[in-house]
Length: 323
Image (cartoon, rainbow, N blue to C red; front, top):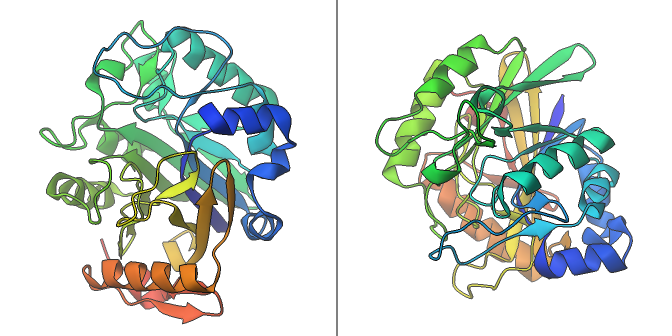
């Protein structure tokens, strides 16, 4: 199986305006659409709700609220997305009503969702995707905010206090998944940091020890390094965010991970450039910056990266780190 992994995908604000004006294909350049189509299954972090209703979460300290129109679900489907995680700090930006709408719109177009639910049990439940004879289990979790956590009677996200208590319930969920390969996709750690913070590194080790074949994180808004089975942060995919000229959150990677029943066997990272509501393949200068940055980030974890054409590649010996 070839698994496509994309990071933070925010389809509200200016991106929402584009979705209402242009065809869904306008979100990604043609060359990137072709790259995404190489994947047998595509999973990403949907960093917004999909709804025309709801009310803003009543927190005077919360600066950003992201809500996409119903067209967003069809746009994701047309781009080949198979599953999204909603375990993040924007799923409830417009409250429970809008989150429930999100489930409905995704169900209508046949996109699976994890990391949130109408109650705690559903929020914490994995989904299993099938490709040929291989079953991929996907588990979503976020370490912020605690106020968004689903309860026995209230919709919300799959929350775990990774900083203070560790993965907790997540390890049991990993062990119980009936699948050949288990992907855990956590929304963890602070924004705009180049490398994983200590509690993220601790949690990653515990997730792998519990049986996660692949861990693909997000939240930092910039891509981070790879260590064995762990992609610490996937970075951005689609958004309208302001650009930090030093960290360059407008430069990103789309990951193609080859997996079998033993876990990942090869990682390819395709350099991307983000504009407002539109993502394309990076040009030569952008690729060079991304390559230098990704190579250095991986080297901090003892992982070697090489160029293969216009892609950054991590070979099997580096990926198949023993648990």
